[in-house]
Image (cartoon, rainbow, N blue to C red; front, side):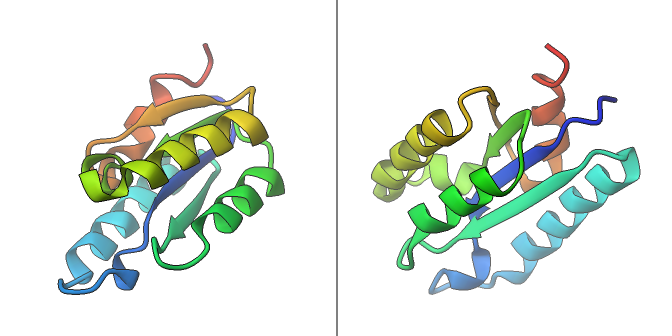
Length: 120
């Protein structure tokens, strides 16, 4: 596996009202562990829709150079977050134009999503 760095951008489950964040937090922890086990450097940017997600995403994108950015399903699948998803995609395009963009299906398969694009 390449030494390329990956950024995962997703919703912060603790910042969402009305549901238990623990199952998603556990899945995120398992996803992070997979990166560590495989020796793939990964940064995580979990955003809250009501906060300043654009600022957090820009800071994460510009802190390190990333070969791939994985955008999580929580941002993509909720129709109410369509505008936020579009902003995230455009921020990646603007601030990390050389990075591939990948999409996961669960927090646990972020590494698989990134691997589809790393080394291309």
